[in-house]
Image (tube, rainbow, N blue to C red; front, side, top):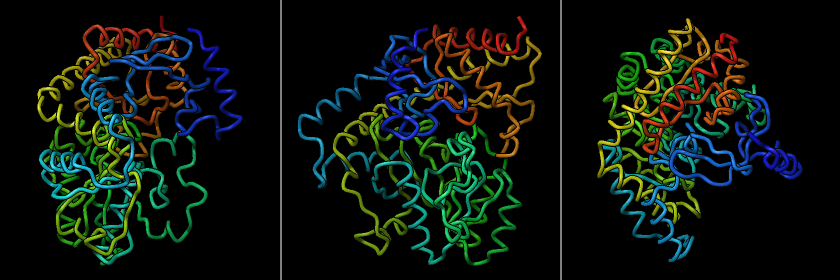
Length: 432
């Protein structure tokens, strides 16, 4: 594998871009070596500037559920660009995609488009505060809701990777209004609410966290949060930026049959273009300007290119529901292959899997929260990442990220991935 061009590009990038990257996890700090610069992608493959091809399990961190360069998405984008790239005014496509979202996610009666998942979560928490007249909210350790100040308190994903879960620049005042609870610990949440009686506006969480690796909710955890919020007049926010439309047409809330008051969305609804959204109950959403007093705006919100791509993506998923069974089957084959290898090699590493998402944790503990996720051997993961890369499989460059599958991954790719996993484990553990 040659990386000469990528290496020279990274050296040049560091002269003009902080760390040479525009998002921290891309810097490969957690896995060693220099990042690869990608030239193009198609189907299940990424191609770097040096001409190397990789089967990849990131899919732009989740949105490309149909794989790269899907014909329907590509056609929608090209047609939209012929009409212009940005209007800063309403378009018919905004209505179409909003209508489709409300059909696919029953808890969402009205939806507001924004430009990123971070914008969506920031706006949802502000709306909850404005609607309830309360200031505090509860988040969970290791859940990642973007880089808004209020969320960078024991955050997951890049914040873990960079070793700075509490970012400089977040004020003490902001931190005081952010209450932390261990993930999957309902009793701790109940105690936190009781200790801050009448002051909690919202509880926000990833119903299925993917930013400390994929972690499944304990039985009764989501249901218990719903009952607690109903009892205490608290807005329950599901951050489905990652899981929305990926785990099911209605996201994780459909899979686990728990209905939030507000839902934040992103990734897939842009079809690969920058986009986010938040939506929920009509009476709450109508508290947003211009019908209500909670201000939120964005010049590029509802951008026509992003709306065209997102509508094409959601329409395809809506019209082809068997995609989710196909993805679950593919995930089962890969995870089954990984588990067979672990058993044969006598390794007790932990794995989680749900639909088109899965994680391999380099720990023998069951990973259920932030503390157990931190028990992973991150140095070993870095070696494993490089070993997989050398065998043509591109993973998320962090132990604390879920892997994402696409419909472009077929049986021959599954076989390659499973064999690469076995060979990589043998290499890094020296057990040939």
